[in-house]
Image 1 (cartoon, rainbow, N blue to C red):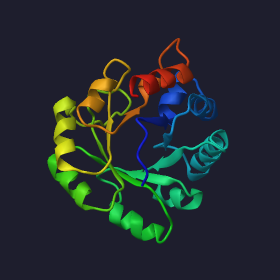
Image 2: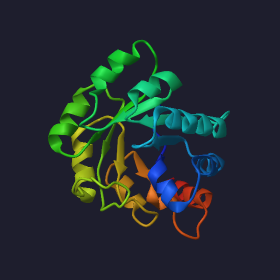
Image 3: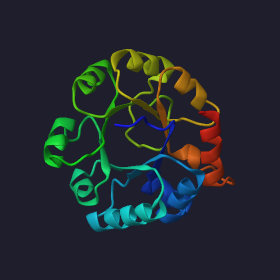
Image 4: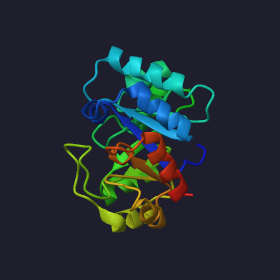
Length: 209
């Protein structure tokens, strides 16, 4: 796969609903900022609701160079042509690859410890995510924070593109990249009260240059 952009924006439906912002509006802000990889995450939506959001996001990024990834929903990724990201308790990347067949599809996998990292490095996932790096409020069942040392350890255990996630802000993003992450995944840090998501994304892009 191509090199991952430094900023990996996650469009999380539950977080957007809590902030009173629509998926389309937020996607438009990310597109206008020039974000190069976006993941859509909706843990509770029906297939029709997820596909509707996917269509809205696709429309906003039409004509732009952006990698689009769907969280968990391998079945819907098959329908949309998007990439897919799976958790360590979800479908194995090898099974996802088998389902995708000859279709070119980016596959990412989450990891939280050495055993999972080693398995991911040896497997067929295109990139590996590690986290949470810092404490996060964006995921109710988040694992224990691994800290910057966890990012350094992950860098030692995989040669694949490494995405760090969890509690990443403008203030600490640079330290995460310096610890070895190729890309930082951000949710809440792009949705701060009184600040425009587009400007926040542009700030991250500047910091992570």
